[in-house]
Image (cartoon, rainbow, N blue to C red; front, side, top):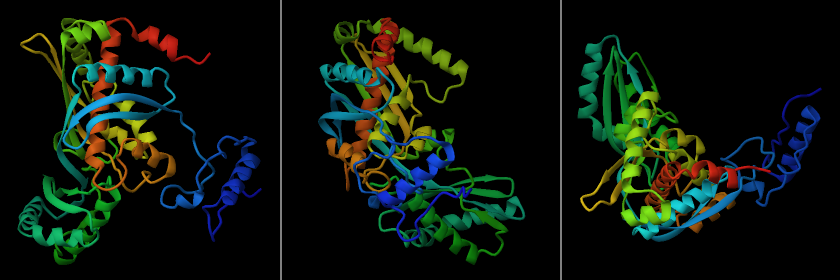
Length: 388
């Protein structure tokens, strides 16, 4: 029996090609793919997004809001699409958004923007690597020009250096417009490195990625230096709003925060928040983001304090939020609709989208944290989170 997945060399992005592959899958496994084969878009829009297309995964999308954002790019109220199969998630974020709206909204600031490719160059000795390090600094303008010949959008911002043994690891930091930019910066960095190798014969070899960009992996280097957008969301919640809406006091939530931070430290977590990955993943699926980037994007640094007036200041710093409003999956029909719901599709929208994502995260952190303290966590999951 032929077990090679069927492909159409003339045009592989048609309903007929997808149906042929579903028939093949049934022959091989006896699995029916009736629901997988139901979708509303033309497969002709999919080149560059998928191979061996057979259908679509239908993830339910819920709506939360209004979310009140006081950003530099996102201003006003937004209704946020969240794609998930976890009961209570939408309700929890909706609850947090209600609290923050009653408290005056979430202030959000994009403080940094950089996407990396991190090549490594190998030399005979550390001394030669050090000489090359100086040359990189002296010739940055030429390296930048070589990289930017490959893109009209990407701009090489700077090159960080990290020597070790006889290696020199470099982090090429770019701005990438409204695209997430991983492929863009890979192509640009290759062009620059190919030129570097052509004029520096002492280089034994180079590798386009030396794992110092830590693509799709959480790392301290990206937590400190940014990959994607570094975004800070913050709010001050009046004590009476915490009491009336969340049924907790400022003292209770602050003590719980200290307790949770110690527990997380002992467990060795990569952030000191509650569940930033939940809201980010749900928005990423709905809005056509590369969902694997949640590995980096969900890293979060939470800070809280009791103000002099007895209210609760709360902030979330997301150092590596990798988002796009152009390219990748953002232009697919369902995902584009969700971005348009936020007025975040297309050019000059990516920082606005980043601010909305960060504000959503902050709402979810407060909602879950207060639910645990108020002893409403289990009961809410019992009510909303079980399939019966």
